Length: 142
Image 1 (cartoon, rainbow, N blue to C red):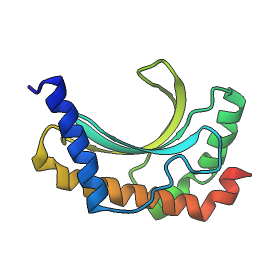
Image 2 (image 1 turned 30 degrees about the vertical axis):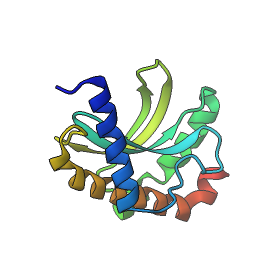
Image 3 (image 1 turned 90 degrees about the vertical axis):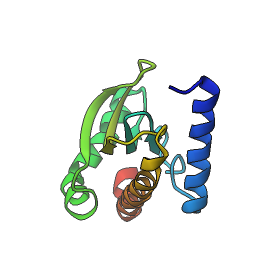
């Protein structure tokens, strides 16, 4: 068990190490679509890379979601065969979003022995998401 400060330091160390290991500019929030972003997540049990549609305007969220669903087979066949499509996800803060994600289980930000595997997973899967997005950006943004 780690203290709050130790846990915070481990999180900082991981993300600094990740940035140094894979120094590049990720798209993340710079998609050109309001409330549409790519995210990295790593906690005590798993790691995840996701494409989140966070618009609180349900009509706008569904519009983007339907475009992603029309590209689903391409994403699964050519980029991320294990992608999970969730039209409704309730975040810890109560916010409702739609998400496409890929997860890696049995890793922990508190276990440095899982960091290398997690870094490679995050890099490879975010690169695949970005490649897909760059290829189909016009359709998703239209």
